[in-house]
Image (cartoon, rainbow, N blue to C red):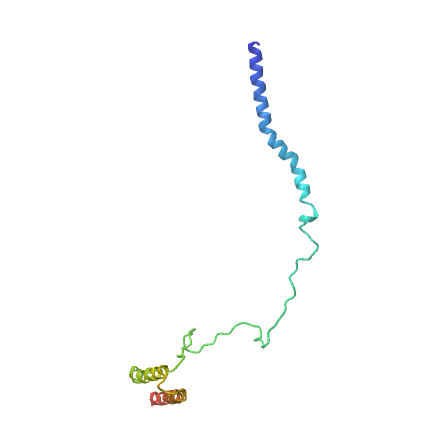
Length: 146
């Protein structure tokens, strides 16, 4: 084996290495037409024949709408407010009324739990207190109005 054969062998190996390095590129280019052709199948159709139009509008408004047109400015002389005045869910009582009524109601609840009063007596007293509460609200409003 002479020196010239050694140099050819190295050059040949270098050429083979470059060809093998380009092999994935050639395989990819060869497979590209096959992959693109498979995208044109019926399973991947972009147009399936169904029109992409919106369904017709259904109007389900029962009340009559105001006539179309520009909005008009109403000058009421006051600033607009977006928070309505909130009302209490129940009539509020004063602290002194609470301190008078609370011991009576607690005693009534204790008497019912212990069984010292009958169910009929308990219901009679509850009805009496409810009647008093309903009348007290009206009386309190009358006092405030004066």
